[in-house]
Structures are given as structure tokens and as C-alpha cells.
Amino acid sequence: MPAVFIEHPARRRVSDEMHARPFALLQAPVRLSHLAILSDKADPALLSLCDRLGIAAPESVPPQFAAEFKGGWLRWERHAEFSSLTVGRSGAFDEPFAETALALLPVDWLETLPGGVVAAAHIAMDATLRSAEDMAVMFAGHPVVGSTMVGGRAEAFTDLHLHDDGCGRILIYDQGLTAGQAGRLTQRLLEIETYRALALLALPQAREASADLAKAAPQLKTIMAALAGPEEGPGADRELLGWLTMLAAQVEHLGAANSYRFSAARAYAALVWKRLDELREVRIAGMQTFSEALGRRFTPAIDTIDHCSNRIEALAQHISRAGDLLRTRVDIALEEKNRDLLKSMDRRAALQLRLQETVEGLSVVAISYYLLGLIGYIAKGLKAAGLHIDSDLSAMAALPIVVGAVIIGVRRLRRAIGGDEKH
Image 1: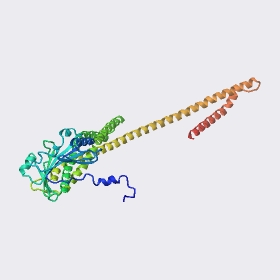
Image 2: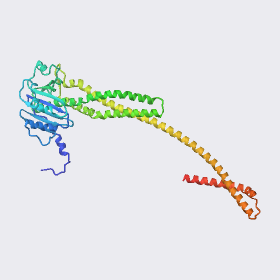
Image 3: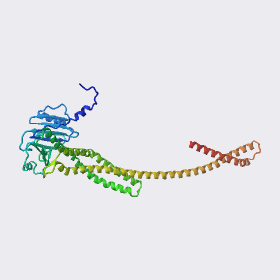
Image 4: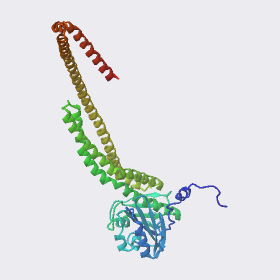
């Protein structure tokens, strides 16, 4: 009976994710070859490979694709930033790495792979344990690491080297693995090889960034010494601010250019250690385990990446604090300038007030003079009309009245103007 409830749009995809990337069922003797291709445009390569091997190609490449072809089988998986191809062939063999599963693929197709192969490894699983002399030949005389795994049902060996064909080598001795256990073991070993390589992609970037940081740190030290010393004026502060801004831009660019790779390295490293734990390794006498061998160089490399990432963040924070200090000093200098400007404006206002009072006094004299002149003209006119009026005595008598009236008028006018300005 079909469900009668309304499903969330993502429910089916979430449910299918629990069954994504299933492990293969393997039975010794078997040989595998694995490639991890760092490209987001690798899907057309799969379609081309299907055409070359006579496999019915899908209309659109799914996240996981598996198919059989003459002589072997392949599995294709698309991940966030890379795609992986695993090729397998079953059947007995004498030399584990003389004729690999990768030899089933066309050479010219391998030459046209997009992006770049970041990890490549061969796995040979057999029920026959090789002698130390045979293993020395298989691993080109390199030191071999190995351990017992899966509760004693398998032994795995590798030298962690790239051989002449550009691939690593892993030899598994099957001591009673089921098909599912064999599939899970090979998948974990291949994931360790892939995630280890992807994590270490950040190491060259970390070393380059460390060199840039080594140049930036003394510059910040010089700037901080200048900030701690006596102020040299606004011109010097502006020069320091420009220098600090340029340094901040360089460090931010450094962080932005490496942030993704560094965070990806931490995520991949966590997957490596998780897969190593799942192997349930038991030491073989006189031989390093996978975990010990990887821990000797892999852990310091990841620590170097983390250290570089932390240095970038710390330097960016120091630059930010230095910028805050410099801006504070510039703000204080501006406030002092504003204070001096206000004092200067106050002095100018006081001078203008005194000048205004002087002008008001002169205005009173001038207005009084003209008014007394008018009164004198009026008195002369009245005298000419026959009235007995002395114009000089009239002007003298009117002098205090006119001057007083002008003073009162000017003061009222000033108060009226001052009241309008307040409103």
C-alpha cells in the first residue's frame, strides 16, 4: 500500500544516501587499480571509457556507476572535488603487480584524463603469502610496513612509495575473509591512499604561505614599534595607515587563497585516521603498522598545515588590532585639532563682539550727528519763517535727548536681533 502522507522533497535523497557508495564483494585472488582524478569535469571521460570498452553508457553520469566488461569490471564515483575510478580483475596470478587491472584500460584514454590524477594505487589480494625475498622484489627494496587486520583474517603490506608506473602498491594476504570483508578492507585501504594524498595537497601551499608570512610578520613588528613610539605627526600616521592597510590586504588575500585547501586537508586527515581505526590493526613482529608509518610523516605534515592556517588567522587579528590602535590615535589627533579650531573660533567670536560694540558706539555718534543736523536745519527753517528760534541752542538742547534715544534704539535693535537668532 503506497504512503498516504506528504513526503519532504529531500526525504528520498536522504534515504538513498545511506546506501551510497556500497563496497564491492571480492574473492581472492583479485587485483584492483584505483585512480582519484582531481577534476569537476571528469564525467565525459567515463562516457568515453564506456564507449571504448563496449559498456552501455548511462544517459547522464550518476554519482556512482558500476559495470562489467570483457576481462574485468569498473566502479566510478563522483565526490565533491574529485572522481574516483576503480578497475578490478579476478583470477590467479604469479606476480601481483606485473600485470595490473589498470592494464585493461586503453592507454590513450588514460593520457586524456582531465584535471590530474592525485592518487593512484594497485591492490593485489591473494591467499598465498609471499616470502620476504619476494616482497622485497615486489616493493623495489623499499622498507615495507604492514599489519594484521580484520580480526586476524588478513595481512596487508605496502611501502608508501610511488613506483615506476606512478602508482602505489598494496599486497593483501587473505586468511579467511568473506566477500564483504574483502570488499570493505580494500575500499578502506584505497580511501586511506586517496584521502592521504588529498590532505597533503595543502602542504606545498602551506610552505609557500609560511614564506609569505615570514615576510609579513617583521613588517607588522615595525608598524607596532612605530605605534608604541612618540607621535611624529599626522603625515606619519597616514603613511603608517597606508602601510598597515596594504599589509592587511596581503594577509587577507593569503587567507582567502588557502582557506578552502587548508580546511579540506583537516577534513581529509580526519577521514584517514577514521579509516585506519576501522582496520583494527595488530602489529606484525618487526614491522611498522600502517598507522605508525603514516603517523611519522602524515601527522607532522597536517600539523604544519594547521600551524600555517593558525598563523594566518593570528596575524590577521594582530593587524586588525594594530589598525584599531592607529585609528584611535588618528581620531585623538583629529579631536585635538577640532578642540584647537573651536578655541580659535571662540577668540574670533570675542574679537567680533568687541568690534561690533565699537561699531555700535560709532553708529550712535554718526546717527546722533545726522539727527542733530536735521534738527539744526529745521530750527533754521523755522527762524527764517519768522519764529524767534536759535538753531544752535536748539541743537544743544536736543543733544542729550537725541543721543539717549539713539542709544536706546540701537540696544533694542541688538536685543531684537539676538532674540531672533536664539529662536
